[in-house]
Length: 359
Image (cartoon, rainbow, N blue to C red; front, side):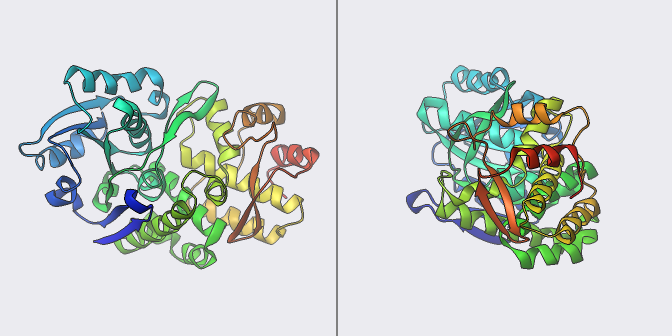
């Protein structure tokens, strides 16, 4: 087992990464402060891992909420099912919410924890690669609105993140690739050495090699923990973690939540960001081809959906958390491993980027 720490003063917390962690009772129970807990999971994960978590709670009073599975259920209506369970069982401020599942479960449970009685304890147990390397770490919680993804949320840190890599054995191939998109992101924004490692080990990741997966998760979490520790509430450099997300969120919203997996939309968004970076004279066509090749190796899409026009993209991107003073901000690349934030771009180049997948 590896342990990383997100350094946030008195709100610092550990990220545990390893095999068979769901069978180590103390990892979970040491972070439950009171004597009650609510486990939130979904219909897919519950039959696989719910009992493993419940058996460790012993005398701790606990209940379970099983939500429907899918991005389209990350909304205010489903969120109320968590509040209903908390209120029905008279859980107080000493209760702990346990998010057992992928990014959707982590996000919606985290937001419930942030808002129930103005904040209760939260433990993240991510069961997908995407949630283990990204969404469970850093304290971003949210639900979606029909007009925009993650537009209703809060920054709220967990007490611990328990990433059991054994859970990846039951992950569908498409979901695995979706998670790899966020892994690739870290190499592109700040870690050239990791980017080069990914080029050499992509096949091992796709074949679920335990050592390769453990290294990719650890390296990704280390990158994210460093960024979050320096800029918890995204006042500056944390925005770099959103490479591809402005385009990607537009795809998810425009195509209907759940039609594209988050990592698939982000992969295409990163491709579009690379093309725009090239058109602006920052990176070479060779670099764009290198990024495209890596995404394709990971079995990820690299072309925007034809159903979304440039006008549609711009309308959707205007409803984005990175918009400031009416200006869409993008995360672009000076080079592979060096990202930057800008709202200084030529609108014609942006249109060309959306209309043409190649630099």
